Image (tube, rainbow, N blue to C red):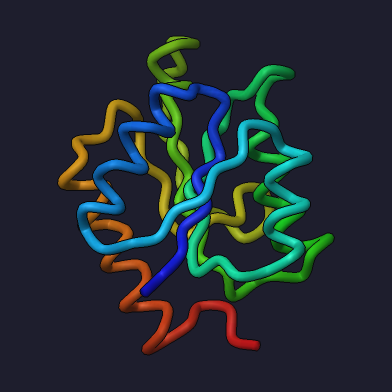
Length: 136
């Protein structure tokens, strides 16, 4: 059974996401701050990370994503980034994964229908196990 770390400062989002992921058969853990997230990720044991962009001090999700890939050297760990940044800040362009600036595997905008979130996680874990984008 895969274990997913949910990184978000919104306890309601964590609770809803946890409920749907557990219903789909996943184990979950959560972190409300970037420091806690990086500490937990560094200790290992996660098969995928769901990461919010906007946290208490700004756009810390971007920094966490880069830290996962560079500081922790975990290029094989799937990262799904979620945000309402475009809507909240009225940004006219879309974000997309980029190995230099946004090193995540999938980027989805909130609100994400729970079924789409679960389906995306299932696809990411299946693809990652069979054909990793960042081989060890």
